[in-house]
Image 1 (cartoon, rainbow, N blue to C red):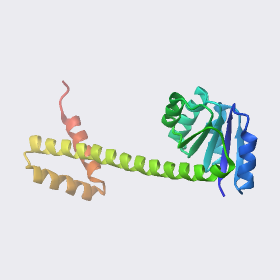
Image 2 (tube, helix red, strand yellow):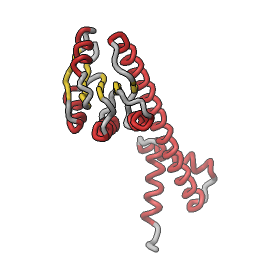
Image 3 (cartoon, rainbow, N blue to C red):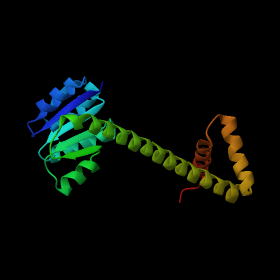
Image 4 (cartoon, helix red, strand yellow):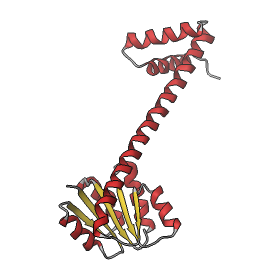
Amino acid sequence: MLRVLLIDDGAHRISLIHDELTHQGHLVVGVVDSALLIHDCVLRLQPDVVIVASESPSRDTLENLSAMSSTCPRPVVVFSEDASQAPMQQALRAGVSAYVIAGLQAERLMPVLQVAIARFEQDHALRGQLDDAQQQLAERKLIDRAKAILISEVGLSEDQAHRHLRKLSMDRGQRLAQAAERVIEARDLLRPPA
């Protein structure tokens, strides 16, 4: 059973989607007809998926979906009658997982939701991997900078500088990047003002 939040963005067929979801055993946790309420409703109601029914997604709806995607991401499905590229691209940039054109058919609802949820989970995992890679790169830069300080100002070799950083991190129970930060901060404290 999915918990679903419905957004009525002017398509006037939200009751059909509501009835079909209920018929299939899902729980509609809310129906919103104001784009400004999307973020708050998602926080309060904690839906598994958000469905937007629209003739063409409005700018307000897309902006609020984008805000929701950055703070409390959820799979989002848009059912639209507008087949033009611009609204579709804007919707995808706003974090929409599936954009379905040309009406809603009851037998297509569940497969569309399943694909949207799977795509959302895949995108979420990829974002996590990207964040981890960026964090590792940032830490690597800190470590390299601290090693350069130890090499140039203390006269250690690169291997000695790395061993020294490792010892500092183990002695203080810190990660290597945190020890590197301390070395950089100490050098900045001791450097005379320019």
